Each structure stands twice: as structure tokens, then as C-alpha cells.
Image (cartoon, rainbow, N blue to C red; front, side):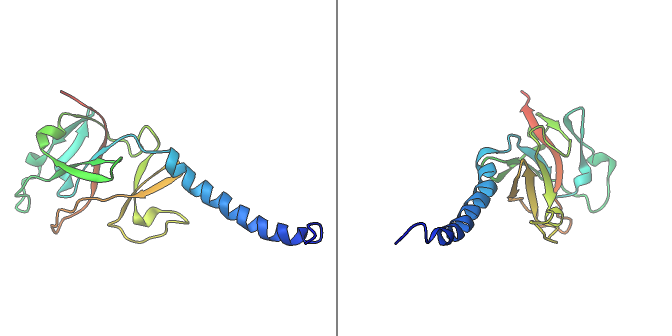
Length: 162
């Protein structure tokens, strides 16, 4: 086989292969290199019970004494490295130093399934993603299995006090 006679065929086959490899690397390489650094605190029930003031979680449940508020809302720490939530007590949560900004110091933010942009189109308001630095990851958010179940971000965990 004469290589000079088939050069156009070789180029025609090689260009799509190289383009596919380039696209795959540009999509998956950022995921391998950029990992979120900050875990976060959230709740799924009666979110108005809590607020962050001076980087500390404050319990406002006494301000909202209504008939449907009969239990303490559950609090969770979301570990971004292993994609899992762990329930914690109010006392443990109040020992966390929190940043309530919507975007973490390393450039990540939490978005719902309806805010994904061109590639991540979804109308699922109960699906949450961690997005930033060219990376989008689905979050495994705990459910409270209550009528008022809703994810409420409280803050990025900067450090644990005490």
C-alpha cells in the first residue's frame, strides 16, 4: 500500500478520532484535577429555624412557634470528598465556623436541576448539583420524608471550633 496515495483517507479517519479524544480529555480532565475543598451544612425540614450570623449557626425556632413546628429540624454535614451526608446535632453544628456565601472560596456553588445551563438541562427541582471549576456533580442529599421536605443550604464549613 502506497502511503502517499492514501494520505487523504488517513487524514479523514485521524481527524475525527483526534477530535473525539480532545473533547473527552477536555470534559474529564477538569473533574480529575479540580475537587471541591469545602464541606457544607444543610437542612431539609423547616429551614426558617436556622440562620448564620457572624459565621455561627443560630437557632431561631423560638421565633416561629406554630402548630406545625413540633420537632427540631435535622441538620446534615455534606462531605464533598465522598459524596455523603451525615446527620449532626444542633450543638455540633453550632461548633462549626460557616461561610453562608452562595459560592465557596474555591469557586463551587450548589444549584438545582433546573439551573444547569445548556448541557445540564433538567426541570427536577429536587435534584441538586455541586458546580464549579468546570465540574458538575450530582449531590446525594438526605430526605426528611416530610411534607415540608426541602433542601436549604446553610453554609460552607470553613473550620470546626472546639
